[in-house]
Image (tube, rainbow, N blue to C red; front, side, top):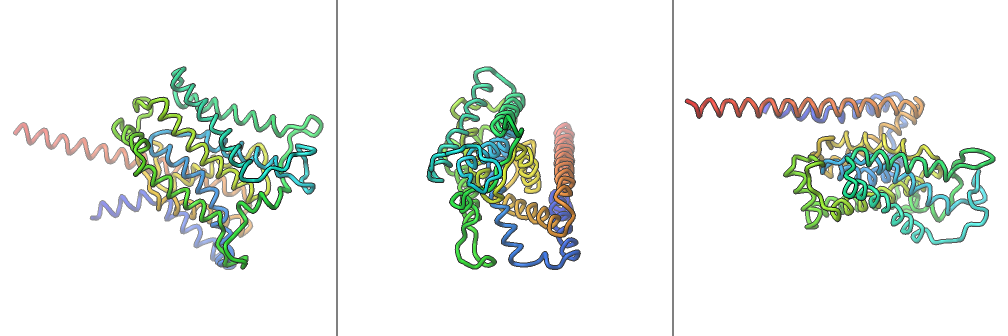
Length: 351
């Protein structure tokens, strides 16, 4: 019992530390604790949860698909470019056609499936190691958004002043009260998260993918995934991440070329807080929701009390280093215990 409590405490230590940080920040500025701020936190966390769902699924089966954050960023930039207004600082199109928001989102998400196709071709047809294929796609997407946002006269531009119809994707709510209304984006994000985890347990093809990962101890090089299975993994997670990126841009009403790389650190930190491992096979739905809430609350609180948004980079670094260190420590401890038990069994058999 004592060892179980100790392991649980160590495993979730980053959650306890961040919760303690929140308590300290609440004492620094007591106005932080309010219904309005809680509503703001869950509104911000909605898009994080969607992209984290896609990233967490890949982590669970043994993939570290960092390109998902850049896919989300690229999708957000492409979609936002169709909904600039006269209030936008820089207009990419002098006369863009009026296209309904759902149509643009659908077309962009389908377009981002090409990222999954490229990854599948590199891995299956050209036998690229996954990490190199992933790195190549990241550089490709990073280059595309920089070229897309480059103006020959001004240089690199950003997108802001987006239309109300587009921003409603993240700002609309059930109820008229700005404090006590429920953001629709929160409902959407939870439904997507629950749907993804339901699919892992009930959809035969996805169950097969999870089983293959488990049998090979989450070693992606030995998993034996078929081209169809790899395509399903990358395209489905790519679509989910793209939608999350679009929702994020709709909420903040701003996006630039660095959006993808900033998103990567946020999503990675959330998944590590939630107990997902670089080595696969760990993590649950409730912890993913809780991890998203705690991380978003910490970043919001740091900015709210006036420490500056760059302080959150230190928090991210701490989360990543601490979580990976704890994960490695627990795995080594478990491996050592299993070796000891195995040795004791051999000695008993010899006697």
